[in-house]
Amino acid sequence: MGAHCVECVGSAQPSRREKVRVAVALGTPYATYTLIGINALMMVLAYPRSSRWFDLGLQAVAIDQLGENYRIITSAFLHGSALHIAFNMLLLFQLGSILERSLGLGRFVGLYFISLIGGSLGALLASSALTLTIGASGAVFGLMGALAVFVRTRGGDIWSSGIGGLLVINIMITFIAPGISVGGHLGGLAAGAMSGWMLDTGTRTQPPRLSNTLAAVYSIGMSAALFVAAVMAAGWAVGRL
Image (cartoon, rainbow, N blue to C red; front, side, top):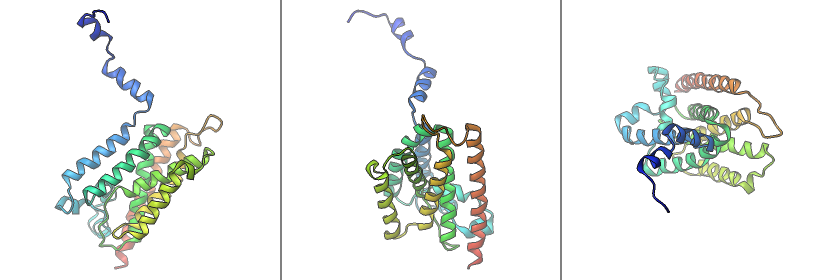
C-alpha cells in the first residue's frame, strides 16, 4: 500500500464546503431531512395531549376568535402518537427524497408548504369549529399527488411506478379508518397535484412551465392565497356553530 505522511493525507481530504458542494450536486435532499427533523423535534416539545400540543393544533374557533392564525402551519408539525409520526415521516422521506432531487430545494419547499396549507384549508372546510386537527398527512398527500402528476406528464404509468397504488391505498384508509381528517388529506392532495404540475421542471424535450423566479413568486403567492382562504374558512366554520 505504501507509506503516507499525516500532513499529505490531511491535505488530500475534501473540505467541508467541498463536501457540501458535492452533496448538492448529487441531490442530497436537505429540505426533506430538515422537515423530518422539525417534526421529530416538535414531537418532543409538543408531545401528544400536552398543553403546547393543544395550543398549536388546528382549530377553527381558536383561529377565528383568538386570532391564532399560526395554527394553520404549526398543526402540520404535530402528531398524535409514535405510529402516526413514524408513518408520516416514512412517506415524507420516500416521497421527499424523489421530489426534492427532481425539483430542487426551493421548488420542493414551495410545494411542501402549499400542500401543507391546502391540507389545513381542507380540514377547516370539512370539520366542525371545535375539532382539533394535527399531523403532516395533508402535506404528505400533496407530495403523493405531485409525484403522480410528474410520472404522468413524463409519459410514465402511475400504476407500474407504484404511486397509483400508494394513492389508492391511502385514500381508502382516509375514508375507512376512524379519526382521520378527510378534508385535510383531500385538500393537501388537490393543492399538491395542482402545484406539482405548475412547478414541474420539465424534461429534456419539455421546458419548465415557470422559471425559477416565477416558481418562487407562484409558491409564495399560492401559499398566501391558501392561508387567507384558511382563515376565512375558520370564520365560516365558527359561523356554523
